Image 1 (cartoon, rainbow, N blue to C red):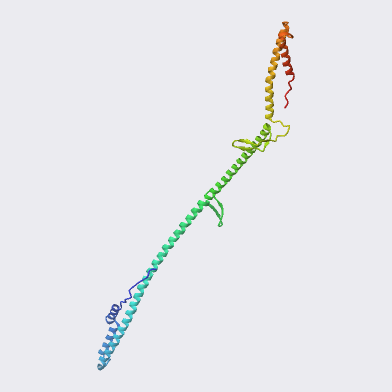
Image 2: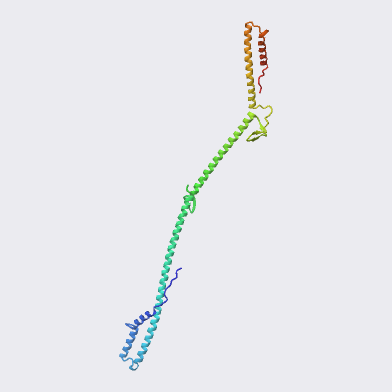
Amino acid sequence: MATITTSTELDVIGKYRELVKVSMEGDSSYIRAKETLEEMYDDNDVPQEGKGEVLAGLISSLHTSVMTTSMNTALAWSAKEKDLALQKLELEKQLDILQNQIEQTKAEADRTTNADLIQQAESLRQHGRMTVVKGKVVGLSDEGLQYQNIQLTKEKVESENKAQELSDAKLKETHAGVNKLVADTYVNYGMYNGYTITDKGITGITDITPVGYTTLSDAQLSIAKEQAKGYAYNAWSNVASGLGSTIGVALTSETDIFTGDNAGILTEWKDTIGKMNKIQPPSF
């Protein structure tokens, strides 16, 4: 805080001289008293023998009174002048303080206004425009960071729900694929357990297919076997057919096929027919 300083010297002498001068000249009380006394002497109101004594006493009394009054007045004048100067300085400092306070108040008001504007901007950025009724927020506009976050959260939830639905669908599809694989394996190959799957293959397989159950692979194997038999059966049929034609030609030409060198044809035909008669229909 600034300290007010001022000179402590009082200009008493100058003021004292000025007061004495004013008191001793012109229309002062001292001059009027002196003139009155002279008139009284001129009018013989005062005896001549006491004139000097009276005059000396009066002058001394007036001089003392003027000197004392002038000195007291000069002191009071100087002191009051210093007081007024000090009061003036104090008032000037007070005005400076008030001006500083006004400027600080204005700056604080500006800071408060800026802070309020920043808070409003932040609120608008965070929450959007508010609808206020009787000092209460009753609605928000569809904008602002919080609204965007809510929308983003909803979108994430919807995306996660869709991803979950897709995952569930894929899981069901996987289950269906597993069920199909199990069913196809059972139909095609039967049931097995106790096996171990390694990078080198499957070991320790135990067939637990129910007794009497024919798998598709078993049926295909039986069909393959029957097809292989069919090739032989077809060959035998072709041989029998060929031999039958040969026998027919021989009989037509009256060739003896029952004795001699041609008897073998009839024997081969009989053997072939015998094999074909032994053929059993396939069973699964």
